[in-house]
Length: 484
Image (cartoon, rainbow, N blue to C red):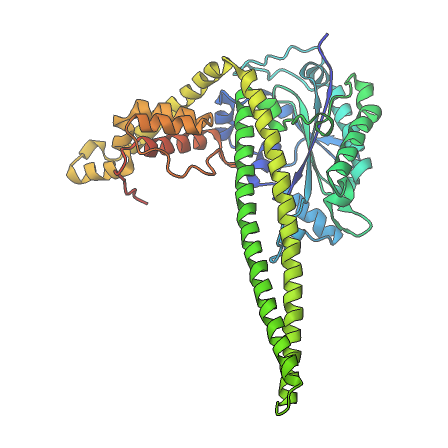
């Protein structure tokens, strides 16, 4: 018998919910975007089931998803109505705080499909027509129970949104919660989830246990393993719409983000150390001058009042330096802690990435073929688009314009660009660089930070890969000035 495990994933959020992420959770998409999403071979959205999605609101009421306000607008309304400030909205905020908890609730696919559709036959093949399906009452009742669980644990007034998606491979809930310290009337992740990793781990373990005891034990979902206990990394939306190769891509992106964080922390440490050293030098010079003045005060013929005034001035400077040094030392300690934590996380990710890469095996070839077909389609669309305006009346001047637009790169070097773009799309950056150089290209230059942005849809991602690949396989020394 297949496992029937519960899923609960809780992630902190410092940046708020972007418009694109809000639109995805609310399915606030145009017909054109729906069409692109449904055709994306790496996604699993089924537009014929989209009408079955719903949200749970105050009192556990089940209703169609209200798209009139974004999640960010809902959050602001809650904070304004309660007179609570967003600490990250301050102009002088030095470090962003964790202002939201993004939660996902679900379970093993078979059991979740039973809850959502009962005994109805669901065709999970891409392009299938499931428009005749109806939503089972069980999924509504279960979701309302989970909503009630969140309301009891975190306060119903702090639930920003609670959406249930039945149009993906595995039905699941997205819940956004404000971590409010009710006693002090402010946003505080540490007050709600714990002041340190050990307390957080205990909180998540307790929530996992209580979710099972209070809700999922009555719905045939067993207590799953939580990441605080196992070190495993639950996937959020990616769990329901991406396969192994996309998990590797996400880990790679996260790893690069940690590497950037480590580099920034190391630069900051160096700067702070230099500041402290300079302050220490200044302090020593002041001490020398104070010693000299003290000696002069004991000598005849000196202006004692002037020396006393100078002594007082130097003592104030010394106090100011001591305060600055204490502040810089505090910042240094915080940065060292941040750097140590980032390095620890990086090592964990490297191990996870290695294990996951091994598990993919030969499957990467099949996934690469899927990516390749998408890149091919986008590539030829870009070629046609770049030549269409000038093709009918091509002359010398227009030939130069096409050259600057990158048309001839795309036309004359198509296979190399496609192959290089494929490697970029599956995040094989070093291999893409080596390949580009083997084709006579100038290589990648600075590829730090390369990866899929959170706001990239699929077509934009393919285009970015193609444009980057075009630049990489271009012969070294040949640069194109692109028209703006």
